[in-house]
Length: 296
Ligand SMILES: [Mn+2]
Image (tube, protein in one colour):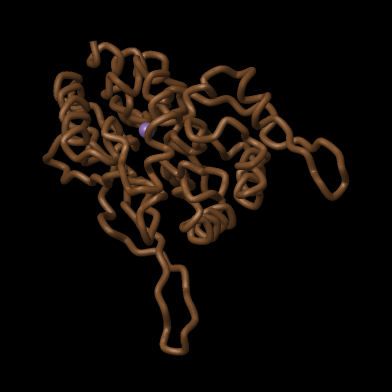
């Protein structure tokens, strides 16, 4: 069944071309919340904003691979918008340039309905002028995206990855219920949601295993996913399962870039200089590797 779910998301994917002029950056699992104790994104928001603005200035296309907005712990989007207004307005800038593509994950699965996207993200209330203003009007969330690589028969599948996680795909409403009533209040005591692969290592390995099984039985299809929060960057002779990690690591965010037909795993983090100023920098963790070495 899991294998069929992944195959279906491959079949229904939206297609975007990729060629030597393309510049893509992927982040996922931001879990943007309301800036309360349960908001895992808050401590990285300056790093994330700086990184994303940098990509915007360099004319990148931003593709978010799911769980961007934490809609399990929060029912009210206004609070999330207020907490991270600068980030949402920057996403709007990408959207206006036609350089924003979104994938839904389990924590923002409600966004698979266009009406819900419009209701939550279409506009916002500007407190200074007391008027409604457009935010991400017309934006659609996708389950999956295929990067069609110019000159190659094979392509790259982008998914959140919860397709390989029965409890978080088919029974996601149960998971959401448990997070809302059980795990969110317990989080303050340090008790973690055991159904989340990001918080349960055995579950994480199971999700990776199922994704790799699908890759293996589908002609070595290259996949870039999120969901587990564990960055992955295979060698060209290994199964081409990539993972961009998350934006809720304790002191950094990780992501994947594709530039000049090459792929990189990168992290953005702070370093302190001798005079005590903090600096946000980008470090390459893996790569560059030629995309074509994964499309054979
Ligand atoms: Mn997820």
